[in-house]
Image (cartoon, rainbow, N blue to C red; front, side, top):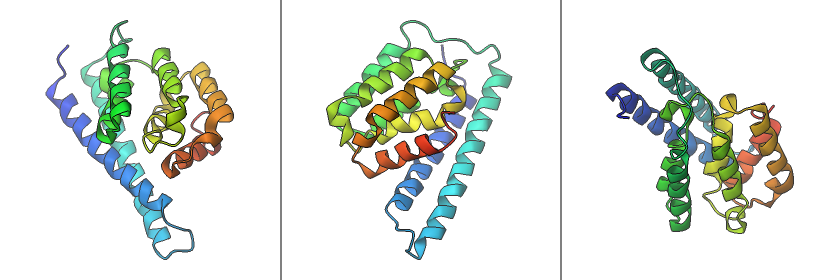
Length: 189
């Protein structure tokens, strides 16, 4: 199935805004609350998060308008995307991991919901001992934050169980921040 030009344009725009949001989030994570820049960086993160929400809403609106009747993924559609994620994790390719995570989004695939296989495979990837200290772990964790509105109750329960059992084992600052946001925010409730 060929993607329409508007889908590609909006998807690229969202990817750029997502990268901006990640940069703001990382800057804030490295800033102490007592630093002068903290408030400005917090505002920058809030602005970037607002832009990301707007961008994703435009993307979702386009898909609903232009591609009504969103579908469920085909049986063989998720596995290659998960395989690409694992390859990029093994290579230590941050851009590749970000793109692989993006490629698992229901919005960019025209899926009605997040497939159970995606959630289960991401949690399996995060359980790998190497991921607990990897700077790449924050990206799969971010998936649960951004796709929380499309997660089923069962999927949210799996994520909560994972965070309860393994959340404290992540040592990378970005991963720790995402774990804290997932635990304390309304994402998985």
